[in-house]
Image (cartoon, rainbow over all chains, first blue to last red; front, side, top):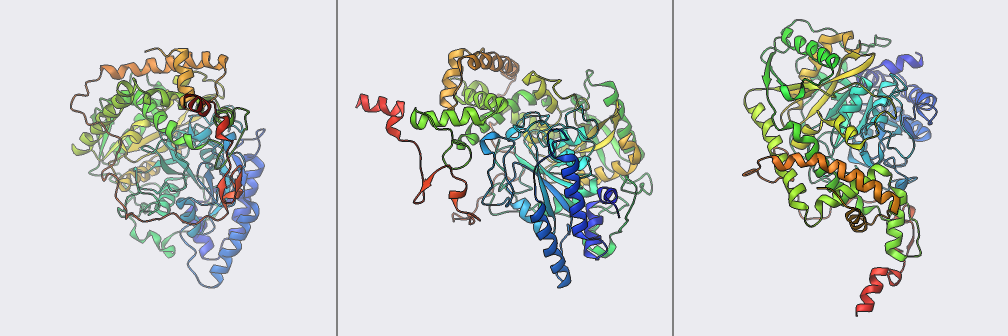
Length: 518
Length: 106
C-alpha cells in the first residue's frame, strides 16, 4: 500500500485493519508523519505543523503491537494518526497556542481529550498551527506565520483551527482536534472542504484546553468524512471529573450504518467493512429517498439574507432539495435575534479573554521579559512583547467593556441579548424543528492578506457564533464548491442532540456523494 | 461611544499591557471603530430578559468539594521562568512604582 492509500482511508477503516492485523499501525503513522513533514511543515510549505512527534509516535505504535500480541483490546482508534490544535495540552509536545508568550512551553499535564484518544489507540503525530490564542478566522494571526489552504495555497484555511482543518484536507490524518469559541472548527472545515463538529457546551471535557472565553469554549473534531468526525466525538465525549462544566449525560453512538440508521453494532469490529484503496467518496449512496422521513429541517431566513453570495445560496438550495428528496420537510423559520450575534459575541468573548489571559504574566510559565521597573514593568514588557496585535486588541476591548462605567452598557446588555438569541433556538426546536440548516460561512475562503479590518474579519463568524452563544451543537459538512473553493453547510440541533445532527449529516453526505466536492 | 486615547492608556494599565504612544493612537481608532458596531445593542429591548453567563440545558453541575487536581508529569521548574525552593521568583516589589507610591503615602 502506498502513501496515498493511507491518506484516503477513513479512521474506522484504519482501526479495523490494525485490530485485524491487516494494516501496520507503524506504516500508517509513518506515512502520516512523512506527509506532515513533506507538505505540512515550514512557512514555505502549508505551515500546518508547529511540532511533530516522530519518536513518540513510533513508541506508541510498538506499544500497540505488544497489546495486540497479548490479545488486549486496541480501542476504537487503533493506529489512527491524529493531529491536535496547539491550544490543547499534550505530553511530550509543545503547547504554544500560536503565541510567542508560550513558545517552547511543554505542558506537564495532558488534556483529557488527548488522553482519551491515546487510550483508544490513536497516535498523536503533530500539533497544528492556529490563530494566536484562538483569536482569528484565518490562521493569519499565528506568531509562527499563516497556514495555507491545501485546496488553494493562495487562500487562508480559515481559523482559528486552520492548521487542524488543513491537516485533514491535506490527507495528513483522517481526524484532528480543534477548539471552538465562535466557529473556529466549523469555519475552517468549510473553507478546507472537510467536516467540522462543535459539540454541545458540556459534551466534551475542556480540561487541558487553554481557556479563551470560558462560557463559549468547546473542543471539537474535524474529520475527512462525517464518519471520521462521529467516531472521534464518540471517543472524546463524556463526563470528566476534571472539568466542572462537563455533562454526565450518556454519550450515544453517533456513527450510523450505510443505511443512515442507528448502528448499535458499530462498535463491533467484525461488522465494519475494511476497504483498502477505495474512492475518495467514502459512503455508499443512500438506499432510498426516505432516509430522513419525518425529519423537519428549519431554514432560518436570517441566514439567507439578500446580500448572501448567490453561488453559496445555490449550493445550499441544492442541499435543501436533497433533504426534501429524502423525505424531510424543509420549513421556513426565523431566528430573529441572530443578526445581533456578532456584537454580542465580540463583547462577551473579549471580556472573558481579558480575564483568562491575565495568567500569562511571566511568573509561572512561558515568556518573561525583565524590566528595570520591577514587577509591574516585568508584567507589561512580558505581555506586550509576548502577545500579538489581535490578542492585545481583544484584551483591551474586553477590559474596556468590563471597566467601571461601561459594564452595564456593554457587558450586561450583551448577556441579556445572548439570552434572547438562545431563546430563539429553543423556540425553533420546541416548534417541532429537528435540525436547522444554514451556510457555514457567507463566502468561500478568501486570499491571504485580503482582509485587514478587524470587524470585517469578525463578520466571517456571522453564521457560526450563534451556536456558541446558545450552547447548542452544530457541524459543517462539505456541500459543494464555488469558484473551485469548498462551501460548507451547517447543521444545528438542540442541546445534546448530536445524534440527530449526525443522522442528518450522514444522509446529506451520502445524498450529495461526489457533488459535495464539485 | 468613542474611545479616547486616555481610555486606551487607562485600560492598558489595568490589563498590564505596555502600549507605546504610536500604538495607543492606532488602538484608539480601532477600538472606537469596533465599538461603533456594538451600539446596535442599545436599541434592543431586553426588559425581562434574564442576564445570562451560562448556556446549556443542564447548567453547571456541582462536584464534591474535594481536591481533584491530578499530578504533573514534570516539576514546575521545567516550565517556570524562575523558581527557588518551590517558590516562583518575581522581581522585587520594592521597585514597583505603585508600591513606591504606597510607601510614600505611608
